[in-house]
Length: 173
Image (cartoon, rainbow, N blue to C red):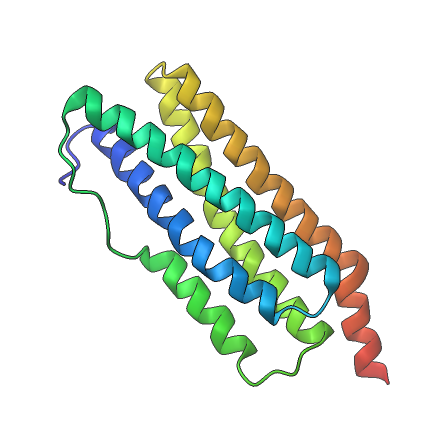
């Protein structure tokens, strides 16, 4: 679907966010399996549950928009190239690494890159919804944005307070 209006861009970004959430729902359980630190595993599991909710919320917004406009249903089914690259990166970085704090640190760094990508997408989407005076959508998208920021903060806390010190300790022994 060519982007010729700001609304076209909004719909295209919603489709990107929808596909992003679908792909992330597949990746997070793998990240949970790869993690060693119990709290990191729980963080990945919790975010996987949030991700499923986000996917449903974005799908509902898309359905409403497409019903309104009859904008066609050429839903973006292609993989999100950015997320695919970020997932491939953490897989390559952790391939062959032993379980432990260093691998957990790599997982956190990769997860935070993904979170920052999501924060950028949802910040843009919330701004567009506000521009179009679609207040209910803006609230939903801002809620998702807040949850993505909270996840990023949690990952930072785990890295700084638990995983990175454990990785340093492991290097010294």
